[in-house]
Image 1: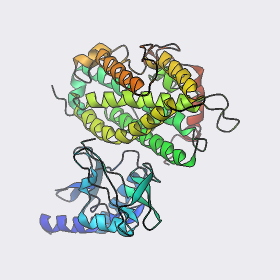
Image 2 (image 1 turned 90 degrees about the horizontal axis):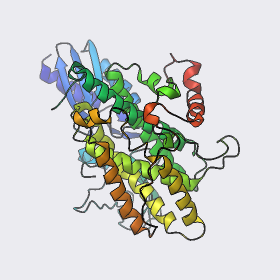
Image 3 (image 1 turned 180 degrees about the horizontal axis):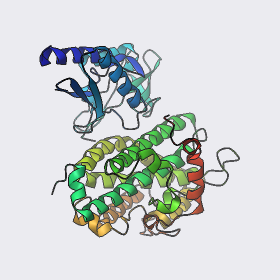
Image 4 (image 1 turned 30 degrees about the vertical axis):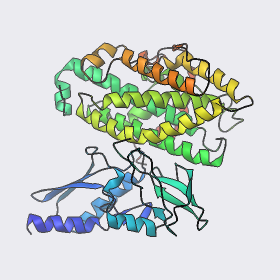
Amino acid sequence: MTDNIKLKRVWEQLQSVKDPEIDSVSVVELGMVEDIILDERNVTINMLPTFMGCPALDIIKKNIEKEIGNLAIFEHIEVVFIYEPPWTSDRISEEGREKLKEFGIAPPPKLDKDGEWHVDCPYCGSTYTTIDNIFGPTACRSILYCKGCKNPFEAMKPISTMM
Amino acid sequence: MNIASVEEAKKDKAYHKALTELLYQLADDDFIIAFRGSEWLGLAPHIEEDVAFSSINQDTMGHAAMFYRLLEDLGEGDMDALAHARNAKDRVNAVVLELVNGPGNYLKEPKYDWAFAVVRHFFYTQAKKLKMESLKNSTYEPLKHVAIKVNMELYYHLLHWRTWFTQLCQANGDAKSRMMAAVDKVLADFGGVLSLGPDAALISQFGLMEGEEMLRQRFIQTMTDIFEKVDFPPFENKLGMKNGDGRKGEHTKDLEDAILTLGEVYNSNPAAVW
């Protein structure tokens, strides 16, 4: 198997590793996979943590080891969390943003030039929303309310090096 | 100067010592304030605050874990042991962060003071923000990367505590006088947070972080502006270390009690994987 094929298989397999707390979105779509390094029969996967206090990181690490192990092409699999570059919310792919919405979570809003942000309702698309709590059930989420369709919803917090 | 790896950091003994000293301060500070914060779980003034405060504490504990990890990488031992199994006298957190939330405990008649919580967490988060800004230029690269990450998350913590502080200071009733009393209590020991300890000179000489005088000046300036904004009496520089210098291992009984409580599960089986 050539290195290119191995790399392709690893990327494909990582699609099946989901965020344990948002199980429609993969770690690839969340922009958490920084680098895959092949070395003979070994592989190192460099991952970027979203939030540092996130208790899901250990689970994600184990799930990656298991899934990549299932490929049965590597003797040794290493999953490392690195901090350079820092994960930012604009790393989430377009597919990832759509899948977040399907899960009922608004994707992280883009910051305007003043660092302000606004979130539209993931259900009805209304812009008539209010923030209930910047902090939500997990470190990366906020709680909002849509005055259009009268649903509470969650949004992923924007995270940027500009902050 | 730029130190990219553990091996390089270990080459110069004095550098290594200053670096580990600074990391212990950052780790122990975050660890104990996150623990004190977590004792508020279920007791915060309203349910949304319970969600927000516990999220902040979890995040802060994550920051402590990162600093302990950097120490583990430098050969200081297992990070879980560093967090749970060290005696009070070996810890270098600032004393103001270890003080109990108030009389009673979370199991029995907690009479915790929310004004004290808001002021302590706001002042601490502000000071931590100033430190992280400075650490973004640290000569120790692994620390620099962690600081950039922590700094982004801290944005939300600071926004949260600044909002509480501003609103309570401008509220009617007994809020203002209670906030003033809390400010006095926190400031009396807050010199400890802004101290870099016995190795302060080395820490700044090696470019690990800017000097403590710079940190104090920036903190005083920031607080002066905010006090003015909330229409409080002018901020007075009453930064002290009334209950001891934590950076030298001086602590109160509050810390000893906290270590017994927070280490209970860990000590029941230190070899267990949770």
